[in-house]
Image 1 (cartoon, rainbow, N blue to C red):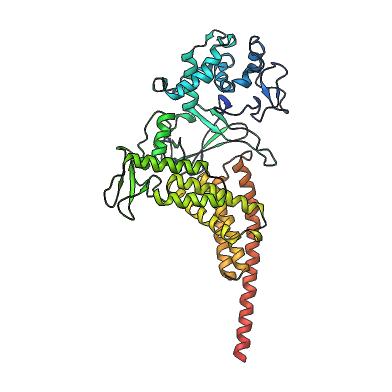
Image 2 (cartoon, helix red, strand yellow; image 1 turned 180 degrees about the vertical axis):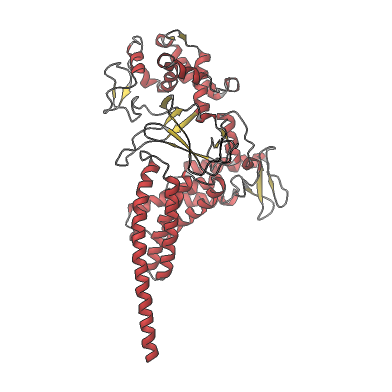
Length: 487
C-alpha cells in the first residue's frame, strides 16, 4: 500500500510513473504494435507484427524475437492477438531483467484464479497457442510453462491500468484501448470512494494526483471498479477481477451514502425502498421490513439489464426503458442511471447536429435535468477532483446557456434572470476546467478542456454584453418612469 508522508492538497502531484509494459487490452481488435492504431500492414523486418501505415517499426527486442521465430506463421499474431501483452512481459527477461523481476514480484492471485472461468479463457487464448509453437518454448534460458503464462496473465489482470484512447492534434481518436503495468501505482489500496485521480498522457506516462485533501499517515486509495456501479455490481466485479471483498464505508451502507444505486422498490408498501445489505446479502425495506425474494430480484435485474443493453439508442426508446425500470428498481438505480447516461449522450448528439435555435426546447430542458441529477450523485460518490464530475459540469453549463438563451428570446425570462443563469453557467464551466485540467491534451478530456477554456472566454464576453443590455434596459425603464410621472 502507499501512505502519505505529509499533508497533500487537492490537485497536488503524488507521483509520476512510466509503465514497464504497455500492450493491447484483452480481446482488443488487431492493432499496430508501434502505436496501437488500427493495423493495415505487416512489419517489413520481422514479417509478422501488425503495423499501421505510419509506423515503420515497433519495439526492437520484440521485432528481433519475431524475426528469428522461423517456425511462426506470418498470420500467427493476427490469429492470436491476445498473446501480445503477455509476451511483452516475458520479453522483459531479455531486454531488462530488473523490470522482469519487479513484474514477477507483483500479485497474480493464481491460487484464487485456478480452474475459474478466466483461467480457462487464458488457457484457450494465450497458454495453448503459445505452448503449441516451438518459437515460444524458451526465451534465452527462461523456459515457458503453462503455470508461468497463467501467472503473467494474472499479474496483468490484477495490476494494469487502462490507457484510454489518445487523440491527435485535430481531436480525432487515434489509439485503441490499451493497458499499462505501473508497479508503484498498482500498490494503492482500493476504496469505492477514491482520494486520488489518475491521468495518463499520450506517451503512456501516468500521473497520480490527490483528488481531495489527504492528511499525513493516510492511505492513498483508488477505485478499481466503476463509480456508478451498484454495490452488488462492484462487489461482483472486485471478487471476480481483483479477488477480494470491499468493506469500505459505501459498501457497508445499505443506502450507498443516500444515493440508493442498489435499492429496489418495495413490493409491499407504496413508497418504501428495499436497500441492499452486502454482508447478508439481502434486499430489505427500510419502512416495513419486507425482504424481496432472491428469485424476484434476479428476475427484475436481469430484465432491466437486458433492456438497457439491447435498447435502441434513440430518445423515445431510452425514455421508455427509464420510465419502466424507475418503477421496479428506482430512479437512481445504477441500471437506470446507465440508461440516463445513454439518453444524455443522444441528447448531446442532437444538440450538436442542429443549430441551437432548431433544437426543441424540451430536449435542452431534459438534458439539463439529467446533468443536474448526475451531478447530485457524483458529488456524493466521487467527491473532490473528478473526471466524471468535470464532464457533467461541462454538459450542465452548455445546456443551461442554450436553454436560458431560448427562454430569453421567447420572453419567458427577463434579462436579469438571463444574466443570473449565465453567471451560474460560468461558475460551472470554471469548475469543470479545474477538474479536467489534469488530463493530457492527447486524451478526449484534454481536448474538452481546451474547448472549455475557449468557451469560458466567449461566455465571459457574452456576460459583459448582457450586463450592458441590462443596464440599458434599466435606464430605459427609469426614463419611461419619469415620463409617466410627468404625465
